[in-house]
Image 1: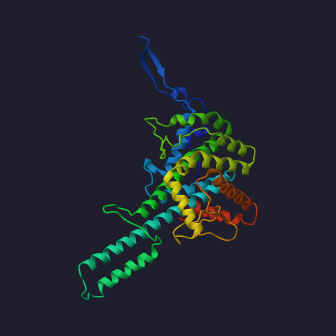
Image 2 (image 1 turned 60 degrees about the vertical axis):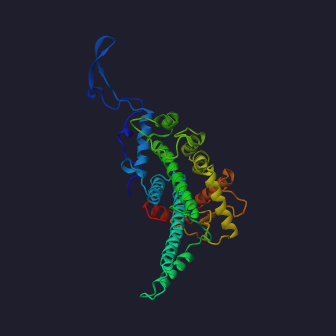
Length: 380
């Protein structure tokens, strides 16, 4: 398994000190105050320089070579694997271990949305082919009876598509239902990527430089955004989530790590991710809020049957829920609202409590096995 926090020359360099001996630095003669003066340019390791290094390390995972991984599901697997390797490399990063499962669950949501889009498309395509043949008045017998075969294919596709009623307007590439699934798909991918680009560099900085340096430099992180020479990948946009803000929960989480209170650190990290990153990215977007509510109500009431997906977190590498305590479900009340921060935090903290408990009982081996499976980049 590859090293998660890769070595870099800056690891052994002192903050606010020159990174090269003065004798190795370039000296140029320039005119300064009407005098020709020898000037030696000495590179210095700054907070901003470190943040660029760790931000670039995160970007290389989701956008190798500067190009964002186009397939959100492949990008999600890369994120899942990195979270898993973070915990395997440093078990103090228990939030990352839990995040490997939570991000895997996002992957399950992506799969569900993509599968639903595909099934709707299959039914539309099969229906179109059947109607095209039928409209030509092809009542004569073809080998195997083409019209009957196409109708049978349409009927089968219709059974597989669980969306009970849908419409596609003339000239539109997707139906109404497909557009809804697509929006969920895109928003899940956006939240997944944005959170990773926020949280991985924080852990990398702490791992490489320690708590005191992080405390010194955290306020400098937003400065690197918008640099013309070293652009930062920040897909959500500054108008929704300001890049790199030094939220209180960040230092509180790492201070808890310093003090050996792992469970408290997970709580602070979870609060940061949900309140400061995902709430403005996902859960304040009106259309996403409506779709989440519709999905939950549909799942709880069972109408339409089979369309909605349960809101749950399963502490395995697979999507399917298990009945041995490793599946944590969101409130099944019809009035429950995942977009509400307070309700969602109760769900997240229960998952964190269950994860911590299982790490200290007979379930630890199964959890480690699942995390290693995720770390290998396996699909959920």
